[in-house]
Length: 540
Image (cartoon, rainbow, N blue to C red; front, side, top):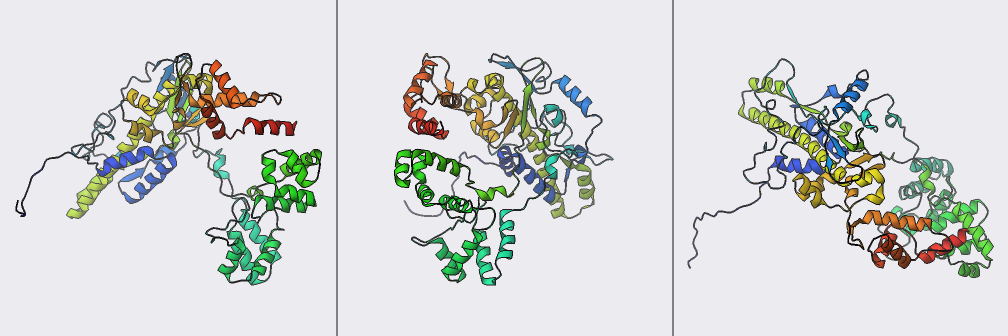
């Protein structure tokens, strides 16, 4: 066959995702902090997007009345029998059907970017709206469609209230700043002060020196001397001075050195104690006879040494403030309903409130003559409308998945972790008619506040362990909790081996192998039966 250029027509199918559809998928898996940052960026670059300032004005006078009305309406309530089984929504809670979700899983080249949102925005999203006020399309994320105010949920977080203690946190003195102040007082030589500042930069938050990218066989101090062009003796002198700074134990290169510095400060670093520190691995294994032989002391002295070691601070630098740990802000609240069952509501404080300023678009587009400017405004309007709809759809999807999780795990909310059932993504996806990948994105980095604590949505998805009598399977998380209870309740004279734990669990109807028990025990950082026996004998 001769080679020659020619034209051919071929027909095929492929998945094409529009930028808007990709954005909707991205928003689903963002946490509330990441979502707030993303919306801020959109507000900066899109002139047609406005923040809903009305939502930030606290209505203290009507807060109680709004809460009562929200409780009376029981919006988005999930009723479930206390004994588990099927959960049925209240008469008003689920009366409005859920809108068709955006097709995130089965997108096609002909997928309309507005598909699935017609029921949500029947009249008020068109670009031909007009009005005297700033005509806007709210994201509908702060209204009564989702929940009552955060205060009505029994666990509101955030807000602009004067009682918001988180906004009043002040920055503490950091360890690096504290060490630098002591260095400036103790060292006057500019060259040695430079060495000290470099060593401070090599110190982690716990107060230990960490040297990265060391060559094989090269000491950390040699690396510092080479980098700064200073003699090693100067580096050692500066390090010796700085190891006397407060808090005692900082600038150590190992746990043994950290403890030695603290014991030296207490005048307790005798040869026996030094030998004890040189064999800390024997302490971890509770091998007391060998320790007694190496240190040349009896078992009572070894017990006294262990008590002294336990009184030391293995991370002295952590007493100084670093970055303030941000509390976990739940995305969903779950509380008991008055008539039985559970009420599921979104945390409105985590939902961005944005508006599409239709009046501004109409004013600017009417005065614009250039084609490029009109195209730019049209793109901004389309992007703004899609963002508002995507935020709304994201909130509805989170609420829908959360409601189904509460239905499936009703026993957990009523009786605790021992009643947690096996659950996978497919079960939730089939129940709410979504794809597993969508449920996976929704449950990533999302948290649920319950009367039993705050849990990530992923926590409720656990593997199944079969039952010995052929009944319902047991959740792996519930089995781990049962193993923890057995170990905590064991007596010093009767330590449970893994085989004994397997026998006890089988009597409870849990069919589990010994290696699985060992795997769960190690995952929970529970020592072996031999180590637990030594530890209990040591603490007796």
